[in-house]
Length: 277
Image 1 (spheres, rainbow, N blue to C red):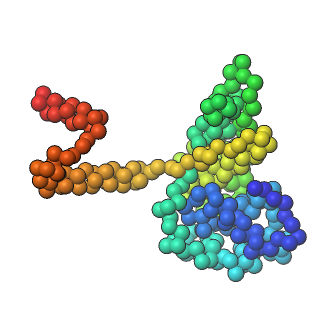
Image 2: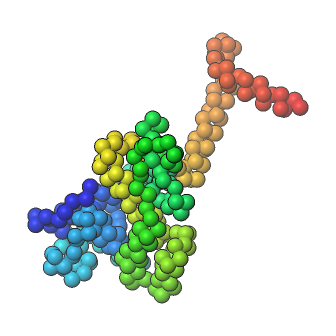
Image 3: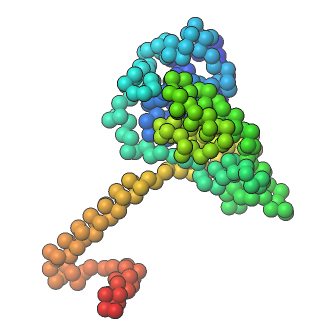
């Protein structure tokens, strides 16, 4: 939720709020973020009011040092990373916090400006869809091309500091020609997609609140990666092997007591026919 800056805000309290926002978003490594990402989150939290100079800091790095009781700076990578103290990966259980994305119909309703479609919220299906001529339904806040360009400009301004000339040229081309995020270096692409998701999420949540509509429980959904799917397949194969091993050691009475669902028997019969022919 966006809140105005208060005289009682301290660097530590503001930074903790930024990390809490990242944690709620479902970001796997929410306890780590670059200095540029931290500033972006602070600006989002304060509706653009945040300025490190208001706290007597000349740079964002100086501002982070004012919160040394809650965060530290990791300089081992290409970009300095702010780390929330006391949040080691083993304590966070990264496997239990999958990456999240905005539900597909709502994502399309916000970002698909190129077709000039109007999207509405259908309370019957609880889905976002293209507006029909006969519809008198709440219209979702699809972005305009200028909105996307402005978001990209802000991203480039915040993340170009300290980058080499080649990467800066890539960023500028991506911004000016509205190219796919695939042209960006992987790290920057991931940061951009996270920021874009957060902007879309904030836009949706504000719209639902202003229209008095209950936010869908599945507004955010897990992203199933190929690695996760492969793991699921390995688990299923292991379970099948275990079932076969169990059958091999059963005696006649135990086998006679086995019960299979009709659907399983039908599929097994179909597989037998395939092997015959």
